[in-house]
Amino acid sequence: MTNNVTMVKLDIKGEYNNFTDFYGVNKVIIYNNIINLFEDFKDKKKKKLVLELSANIENIQWKTELEFTRKEIYVLKRDILPFFEGIEDYETCEKVFNLCETIK
Image (cartoon, rainbow, N blue to C red; front, side):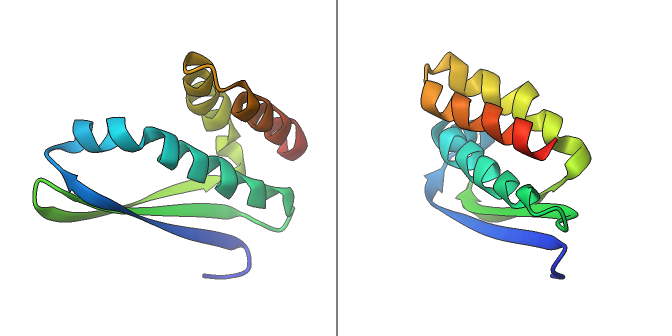
């Protein structure tokens, strides 16, 4: 990876019967990692962020990469902020809101 790209690897342990099971149980962990990853856009030189997820789902070792550019800051407001509002985690909501204001 170049200096313009940040990559974070998230290996989620456990056995999951399906993707719904995996995502439901780990949504908070995944979203918090995305928030932390977006912190790197405070560095104006960063062009791309990558979150590599891996887990054992349906007895298959699964891996995927989520890539974000600066244009995709809307993901924080559209997907992540409403999720944390829904579970009444207002501390994280404030963190997301402030992050969006900082890196826009």
